[in-house]
Image (tube, rainbow, N blue to C red; front, side):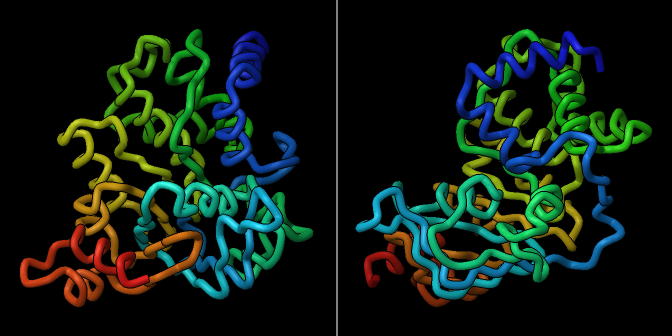
Length: 288
């Protein structure tokens, strides 16, 4: 990739806070491009993420997220909660983009905020809820630059970018500038950016926001078809999406985990005679 393209992307990200967060989520704080070797997910065992005594807050007297113990295993996991429940704070903490005040976060036993932080963060893909891309760059250029940041081998970077673009349904827009993409297309590009390095842990913050029903179904299909050894943690306000694609669910309310278990059991126990996922959620937070 040429230096002029890299300068454009860097300049665009400096203009946009969420763009910077994307790079932090994909690359990890303090990780130098070219420093680490890319690890293909197919060589790895099923991943486990564990949180213990985690507390995140913006004010010392008011924690946003407080989690005593939570273990997430490989597979699609739903993260649900009302606005302000702490979902985005939790996802950013798991992405390595926000250091908790207390507690530990581990990925297969490696402390996400410990001495191996750089290497652990390299195994994580993060799709923020809101993001902007530099309008001058094409879809392919954005993904190519992110491959360079993540030290994806040059011999596979082009193929992985193409696969990510194809997976999110943007193959016919690969050479189009991002400023010419619709809002839904930019959301799909953000998903491709989180997928391009074949992460072991994929964090998706409201991935179906702004998508039409057909596109939402496409995102659900992508998640369902991901390697079963990956952990996919997906937040959403659309309970239909959560119920249809996840094997387990975490209900976060006022920064505290109110339920963690199988999605099917959650709906059966709290969803009433019609087994409504939305009713199950509302019942759970009402009883909290």
